[in-house]
Image (tube, rainbow, N blue to C red):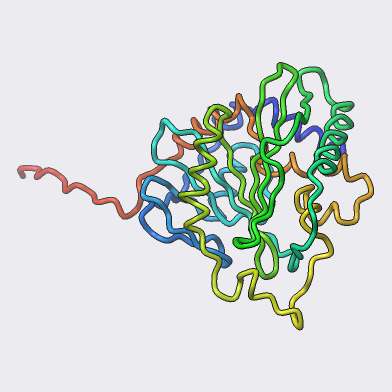
Length: 289
């Protein structure tokens, strides 16, 4: 518990610039204008203005930046425009088929998050504490797309507001986690971008769709939509849902926007860009010999 708390506190304090300076990863950037695979579960028709990293390189970004990896990474998307500072991260977890017939009690879920934050703050030093203030977007489920969406509002001790914007796409045997990281002043614009230019272009592969579920052969998850919002499998059997919910949710990779850290993240990523292997190479000038 203390290890998780320390890790979460580190998120809010930002990552070590020394650690970032010592890393030498290069990432295999894929330019937009083509269809890219999100593991074996889905694909995205990548906008020409975007860049993509596969699951392995997404893990490298996390490790390079001092972040833990979930082991479920299947890709990430970034803007080409260096004036934009957002990123979208994808995980896929094979949890079993999640039933979607549960009524979501947004008020009860919010109280669980608030209680968990207050409890976790007891182990934090001044300047490291945060507070859940409400929903940016109350949890809602789209029965047509099988997407579950919510956005939690938080603030630090300086009353600076940030958010945790999440989408879960239910599949035949699990769910795709979609996490948007952006700055507060850009959140509305970037949420529209996520919906119109990424999620609308995401296609679950044949045989993997939610509607492909076969009750005679497929495993069913032992939890529903509310537990998925609160963190997933670990909470399905947990009694202290409030505390565990906030710890699991905040320990998610880049699940919470760090106001000071987003600029550092982008500084790191920009430095690590390399030209695509397909970029033409200009012929050398004749030597004159």
